[in-house]
Length: 405
Image (cartoon, rainbow, N blue to C red; front, top):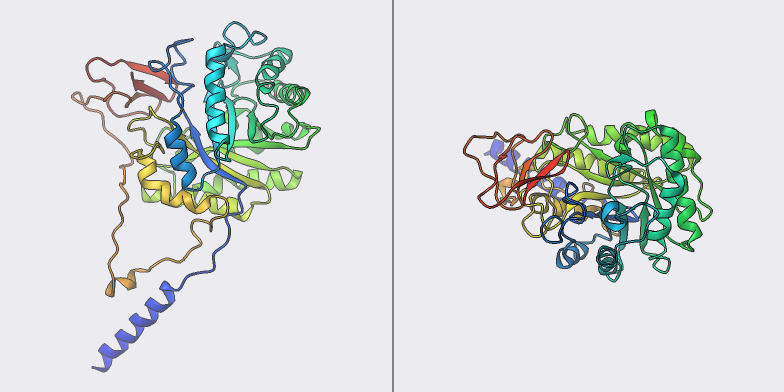
C-alpha cells in the first residue's frame, strides 16, 4: 500500500506540473500567411488558357486561411502573361484585371497582398540583363496599386545563377521605379541570388546590404526549405533542428546590418521530424522578431491536388497536418510551441488522440501507379506516379513540379 500511494502521489505531481499552462508570448510577427499559387502555372505554355494552363487563387480558400489568423498572401504570376510582348510593353488587360481582382480580394479582408512576378530573374527563359527594362516593367505594375498600402511589391522570385552585381542592380532599379510611380507607402520585398536561400545568404547576397529605399520600407525576402538540398522537393527533413540552424547566419547578418526580413517561402513534410524542424525555425524567428517580421507557407492554391506541402482548404496535405501549428504564429497569437503541453504521465487520467495525417518520408513509384487530375506527376526528386489518368497530360510547371492537366 505504501508503494502504491507513493506512485499515486508522483503521478499526481507529474500531472500538476505538466498540465499547468506555461507563460505564453505573442508571436511578435507583423505578417504570417501563405503563398497562393495558380496564376504562375503552365509556364511552358504562354500565354496559355485560364482554367486549363493556369488558375487564379480561390477567394473562399483565402478567406478560410484569413479566418485562421493569416494576414498576408503572396500571389505568384508570370511576367510573360502580364506583359507578353516585351518588358517595356503594355500589360495584357485581362490578366492584369484578374491580378487586380485577386489583390482586391485579399486587401478587402484587411490582409496584405504580395505581388510576386514568379520568374526566377528571367523573361521567356532568358536572364533579365537590362535594369531599365526591368524598371519599366515595375512602373507598369506599381502604377496599378499606388493607392493601396496593403499591397507589397516582391521584386522577382528566386534569382539564381546570375551575376551578383546584376541582382543588386535589378533590385535597385525596381525600388527606384516603384517609388517614382507615387507608390511610397507600400513595402517592397527584395530577393537575392541562389534562390534567395536564408542558409546561403551570408555567402552569396551580402552586397544587397547596399540597396536603398527613400521611403525606408525595404524588407529582405528569404526562402528556406528543410530537405537535404534545400530545394523543397522532398517531405524528408534533414533533422528536427535543421530549421533553426539554417536561418541562424541570416539572423546574425540582419542584426549586424540593421535590416529586417520575411521568410517568403518555407515548408516541411507532414511528419514529426519536419514538424519539429518547422516549429524550431519559427520559434527562432519569434525570438528574433526584431529582424524577422514573419513568413509565408509554400503553398496554397486550387490545383495542388496531393502535393506534399499543399495548404489549400480543406483537404490539402499541409492544411490537414499543419494548420493548427501555423495558427500559433499568426499576428497577435501566442507563439506556436510555447504554450502548455500534456505529458505522457497524464494518460493515467485522460487519453487524447491526434487527427493529423502523417505522410511517409518517401514515395515509391510503381508501374501501375496513376496520378489523378491536378495531382503531381513529376519534378526533381519526385518518386511518385508519373503517368496521368486517362484524358490528362503530365505538364511541367517548373523544374520541381509537374501536374496532371
